Image (tube, rainbow over all chains, first blue to last red; front, top):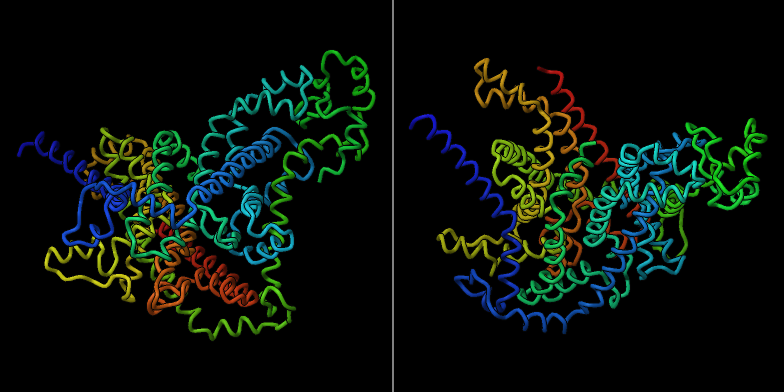
Length: 277
Length: 351
């Protein structure tokens, strides 16, 4: 083998290994579709069916008999959308104040933000549960939305972007025009920080959509669940009817993954930036 | 927090008025807007030396802007965390009266074999998942970095597992590792290797959970490493190659040392998230008829500490003991993170 050949061989083998990893990465999605489109008997049979079947609609019908899919979907969407909108609003406002203004106690308050960042939610969840009982929020979606609005990561992220991405000249110009804090925020800061908001929004939405332990604790009413909890209960109750359960998994997971792939390139770049800071 | 809106508006007019935006580094006389001639005089007379009350009042928009986080955080996070400490010294079922029991919960914890079993399970699963995950992620990152084609496709495909719902993945793993009908056992039977009762053996249960975590997070870590690799200047590699260093030598003498801060980051993050495994065993064994739900499957081999905490607090309503478990566990996590930190940092000093 001469040098060019060897170099080409090495390049090819890199791609072979990477493609293998890609296949492992996406195989579950393929297999979920296979299971959701066949019957449970097909899945149990040996050798197993490896390709899509035509049973998806029947499975979905069974699914809708066993589980309030659209109710859970609606709850999940309400929680994810409200959480995302509130986090974007609160965090961009706080970030603007921290990035562009001096005010008494700023250092201390921001330091507190950093220090409290390490506390895991599990450490608070028992009293949180009791607070929700006292407020009468237990079992309601408020119990999920309101605590999730205290999002320290979002403030760091937005502050970083606001201090570099919003030109001081624009803010000064707005001040000369007589714009106060909130008008500067609305007319100058918001248009400038849109890319950072896009990342934070997608990130918050996905986390909220996939959250499991908080809704598991807070949503005590079995007729009002989020998709993740409802799916887990469906699986716990009908763990042998794979094709039906998988049609639920398919409906609950694949749309989010497909939507994500649209935004993926920018999102991944931002995610690494957020992680490496 | 923003107790001064009244004073603020008395001094400066309506919220959108000109005096609301006054940063320390921005001169105050810039704030005046056109069409408000009455204001034009006031900042000059009162702006020279405002009283402390006035000064604070000027900042009300900033305090208002940051207040949602601090309000919500105090009520739903800070107070509960502190209250959890208090609860750990009580006996309480959530409804009846609390009884102060001193250190009894912690004494019980120290002698509780199930707690130590859960700690052991958590640590074993964490090691089984994290070590191969970070190792493979590093290799993957080097491979992606070595090529120029398909890189953004690889990045997206490798990243997708990390945004996928953990419940869905756990159901999927439960299906393919199923003892009787799973895909894995079908393949093993096809290869005449014999089926393995994955979800009933003490070690394979941990292996399945670790495999799940590895599947979900290897790509994410690879992409983090990739970002680090791309930040290493290529002149360094050129120079090493000129000096006759082979690929292995380059990897261990240049890549690894320069990636160390990022490796530290991934080690800390995967420690914190890996030790908090809960959903995986909860969903996988939530349906196991042979055991209670939330007991971690056969032989409690999948009982992680957080699952034990959840079971104690929300199945048996032993809030006091639950609080003791979760605080003790938080200290264990902190200890392990500090040990990891020390290890990675010390390696840095060696070469």
